[in-house]
Image (cartoon, rainbow, N blue to C red):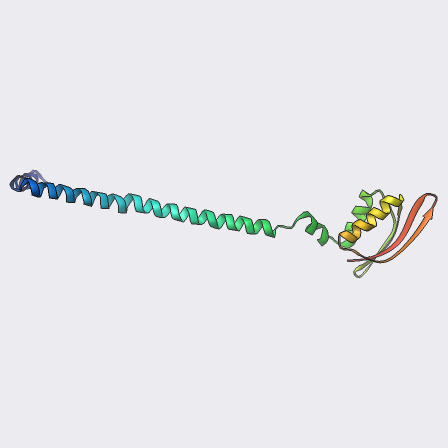
Amino acid sequence: MNIDGWRVLKQAWGRTSRREQGLLLGLAGLVLVAVAYTSIWQPTRQRLEVAERQHRQQAELSARIQRAEPTRETTAGTRPLSVRVNEDATAAGLDIAQMEVDGDSLRLAVSGEANSLLRWLDEQERDGAVLQSLTLEAENGVLGARVVLRQ
């Protein structure tokens, strides 16, 4: 707006009554508040709602991923029976003299201290192996077992 435009506006303002000037100032304030609301507050509130929704979605996704992760027990159950049996027998201090895989069955000859061998057999059943047959023999203080396990 140039200087003449301001002059005309100032003259028009001077011709209006105090009451009209007050109403115009009130209207200008109301317009300013409406513009501030629509250009500042409302977009900020909408961004906050979007951020909260995304946070909830991420939290739900995280929970679903954690539920889907295999636990240690699940992982142990998915390993091949021969691998699991061999690792567990070694950890128990047992000696495997023979191991033969036949389909989903595992035949083996294992020996060691009696309590360790019996605990190991119990652990195999708890881990999901099915004991199909068991023959125990004691020789020179060592317990030997011929075992057929099935997954």
